[in-house]
Length: 135
Image 1 (tube, rainbow, N blue to C red):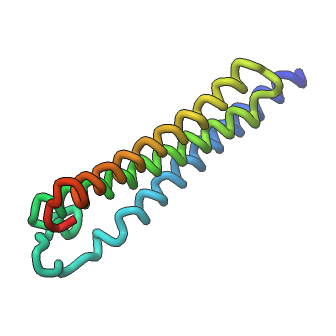
Image 2 (cartoon, helix red, strand yellow):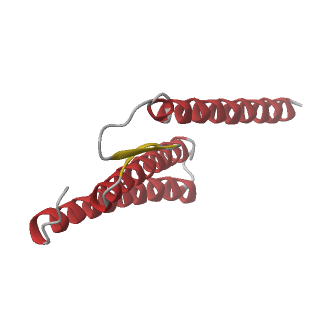
């Protein structure tokens, strides 16, 4: 009887946790696009789109695209780190769950380092080596 009550409480807790995470994700997405929603006028050399002001020259457009992509990659990395930490904290001594949580954290950090390194490499090649104007 006690085990059934505990199982029901855990299921109820898991449902509340999932609802809370979903609401928090929606709130985070709302604030992520808040600045582009209220962007009215674009400076010279940029075109207004649904995603905000986008540069018209190819170099500026690519830089803007990279920065938007890095924002999404950073968000995914943070969510993966949080999920990995949750797995580590809730592993209760289970080595499989502990290793899975650690791998989420490690691979999220590696992915973030690779993304930032790729962006830095792109900027160095574009500005210093090739000399593309607008970088």
